[in-house]
Image (cartoon, rainbow, N blue to C red; front, side, top):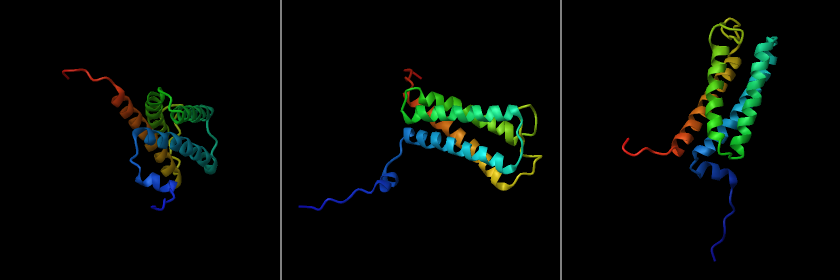
Length: 150
């Protein structure tokens, strides 16, 4: 009788072929984590944020938690929510932190001469949001009915 080997759960992550739904979960949870780190980084910088930036950032964090819950519950609207939120968040964080001051929602890092850690965190938030939108879009496209003759 062959001896049964014990399963090692961490190896399942390495061996398993990840699906779009797996990646959506990674980027949804990742965004909440990264945006929370980003919020803590604002405290570390020792700056006072304008009320507009504070409300915008808090709204984005709450929205990301909502999207994460939809994704983790495998709700049918999760890919659409991830696409919409991810695109808006990527553009919003880019416009607020990477572009020069241009609007009352601007909090440009350029004139502040912030350290490398702040830049890395902000860019990671943007990259994760963009990835969330791309994976959500990919899932939506894979579910879309195909028109014959096109």
